[in-house]
Length: 274
Ligand code: UTP
Image (tube, rainbow, N blue to C red; front, side):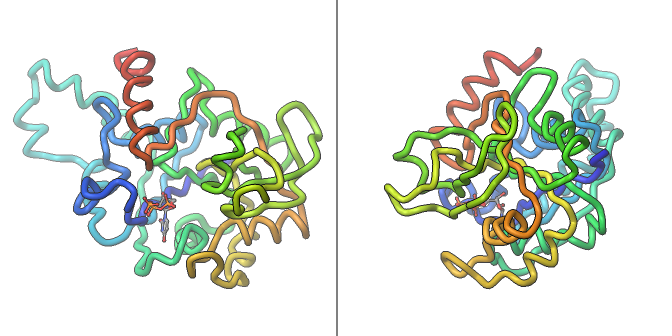
């Protein structure tokens, strides 16, 4: 069983400036909950108990969110408003939260490597909280965790995107070995228009085996001087096995204004108060 879930949450969130100038992108609310709370909820529903969060400068609000606020608790104790804290109290009681700081923003691969002391020598999930995924009772992480129990290797979640969008993602190619499951043979980070190996784009949900850490350590900085997780995953695919899973459910790119608005509308209709 996968018990640990890593949340790389140190990025600057430049696409959402000025909102993210002093507020972590992961704390942007979708209806009445911050993005990262949806990710933690999804991980807990998938049976995970250790939330390992990679933070950076200006990210204190994330730690405060998953901690007691004594003054507030005292103020609303015994009133009707207390029930508004029910969900977050439930999450806090269901998981351990640990934090580590990424001192320099050297990319997602580097952020994941920074989380190594929290994750240890265990397989682990990775959630990019700005990708909000919703699928009723069986969330995307629960689907992937079940697959991991069957295949015991690294798994990336993929989604079909229009060709005009592939340049925004890591894109895989591979042979379909079962319904919605591909064995990855190639992976390109943000391919130039017209050169993507397929329309299957990697989104912000992964299960990784711990040998990924050595592979990241060997990875030279790629596009934009950042250590790309895609490069390390490609090495893993070439030397071992990486699966891509076309998940069931809705996914919203809340790092973009359009995706964020779509997420709010969808969650207000389908998730809020349900
Ligand atoms: P993004 O590519 O979305 O970057 O990172 P970003 O900084 O968050 O947002 P933009 O593009 O500037 O608007 C994907 C994920 O990786 C994390 C981010 O927090 C996000 O969850 N990340 C990225 C890190 O933790 N550290 C990094 O150095 C880079």
